[in-house]
Image (cartoon, rainbow, N blue to C red; front, side, top):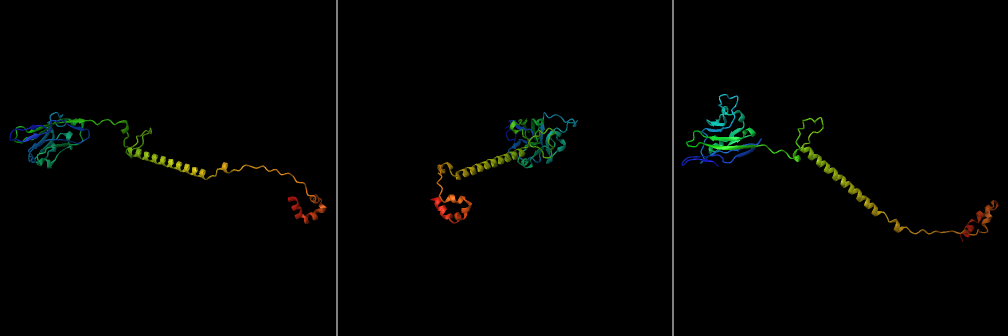
Length: 248
């Protein structure tokens, strides 16, 4: 920490180490009094020695990053590059905290900032803070899937990028379909296995085939009489006897 002080005086404390910020982020530039002192009635100036002048400000009056005086911010004296992007905490001013919050950092914001209290009864009334701004790292190939606005139309070549929510939905649907397909195959295989277990083993129950040969028996003497139509009535009356004779 940078200490600018003499015996019996306040210490204006900034930072000896550079403050790093990424493009698009918010950053706080530290500066406070030690011991604490209510500076709400004092003037607090945040400036940049290397700040390029505003071409529209021919008198170079808008040289401040942030100017606090008369109990409020003086936006008319602020450089247009910092318009609407700087803030001092009123609660912090009560205890001597003059840290400057800078929002939506850009590469042009990098530089050396000065926190200055002109009416402070000190020999040294300022502290310096160095801001370093870095660009975000390029995305890796796995992170190149970007979110597409639903209102945007599909590109004519059909090569529109897939949004992260859509990719997750597709992955879930594919997983569910594959799971159901695998489950269906398992059920079919189980049913076929059960049917095969219930069917009898035909090889084990099949009995050997016995060939039976019948030899023609000699005709009964009375049977020959039935071949004659004249003896038909006689055969009819003695049918039972003939059957017994043939069987025997």
